[in-house]
Image (cartoon, rainbow, N blue to C red):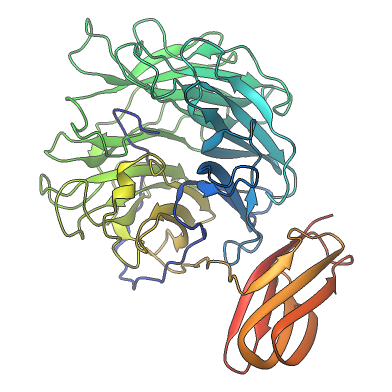
Amino acid sequence: MKPVFFSLFFLACFVTTAFSQPKNEAVSNGAFFDGEPYLAVNPTNTNNMIIAWMSYVPNPGRPLLEQLGIRVRSSFDGGQTWGHELTMPHFSPTFHSADVSMAFHGSALFMSYVDYRQNPDSGAILVARSDDGGMTWHQPVKAFDGYDNNDKPIDRPWIAVDNSGTATDGTIYITTKPAPWDPMPNRPYMKYSTDNGLTWSKIDTVDGGDYLTTLISAPMVSPAVTSDGIFRAAYLSWNLQKALYPRFTLASSTDFGKTYNRTTIVGLHGKTTADTLSKLGQHLAVDPKNPQNLLLTWIDARDGDPDVYATVSHDGGVTWSTEIRINDDPKNNGVWQDLVWANYSENGKCVISWRDRRKGDSTEYAKGSDIYFAVSTDGGTTFGKNIRLSDQTAPFNIVLNGAGNDFQSTAIVHDSLCISWGDVRTGKLAIYFVKASLSDGIATVIPVSEEDSRISIFPNPASHSLSLRLKLDEPDRTDLFIYDGTGEEIWHDMTSGTNMVFQVVDVSKFSTGIYTVVAKTSRETFSQKLTVVR
């Protein structure tokens, strides 16, 4: 759902190398709508990546109900292949799920998402845990209830985990804001858990003192935990006695939010944009090695149209650099940027990605768009050339006017940017994944293809045996293979003279992981992902 003021973030490195555009293929295969993806990378095995997003999902008990749910896919080979889709459970069978985010603590992956109903209002923020890289999940726990207070605090939650190794290591934080239909005044909220998400603290506000949000509609918080265990939160506050316009605020706490030190990051020159469709959520990123390095990015229209801006701090948020414009197209040219995100790499590089309309065919928001990124190798002082990741400009589609495409998501693996976003190049909103080198612009881009519906695997995930069904256009010899994540063939069989293949496969001795089932005929080859669990 839509914040009124801003968009997510991050910084970039000096890049000038020319490159050709790689082919982008969809991670998702929903019939109509797949939006707002979140990407997580396992720090104990960086080949293990998980993408979760919101999608319309079937409801067997209510076939006419258009129901939003959270879908999940995992990769164990660095994003080259992706496993079977899972759908996260609902708190109630008539609820919708949205607003997913994820964070690792060691090898344990935590996911938060909203499960809600409007009219009559009800819902919760649920938290689930996976211990096998996203292939299976424990039953979700309710962290927030829609009736925790009168603000209905269950919109756009973000999850952040303390990986500091200090006394607070393992603490899970979730920030949230009131439902979009809840009238002002609104305030941002936080809860925390110190027992792996099993129980949660009482609800409390993030704003306070001279840094209140009561004049801001739907005040979103961007949370993070620095490597010294300090909880950080960036949000928009407004005090008319202090300034004519809102200001970005940093709230920092060393005692689980019982007390905060709040300071101004940057004051705004006015509204970021008068347009209510642009995706305008600020984003705070922190250096995983140096707790003094922080970065904030947002969308700002001070130059005449919405641009990507950023500022950095090298003293834990006490002082901040002069804000700088990240996109390198001409100022006030009618090209709108939005949908920002950012990360630090392990060696201190800053990376920002965003949606850009410089190659579109019209003006303002309703224009064709691409995904770009930029890199800083000097801690955010300067940024390199803007690099286009999309292999084709996605034409505007009216589905982008609605909720569900407010964010994209990135992660840094060694010296590569991994990014997942949604666009409408095929006429529906679908999720795409790309892996790009930071050192030379783009070196390797790994597409993630849709699953092929001609191969049916049941059950999937499987643990003992599975039924493999294959439908061909006409009878042919067919070789069937199963390959593990390293590409090694571990099973092979052959059929001939039929266009309907049925095979039972014993997988009881297969290790837990993602496999690829491949069918080869005399005319074509196609494949499907298989997940084996124990």
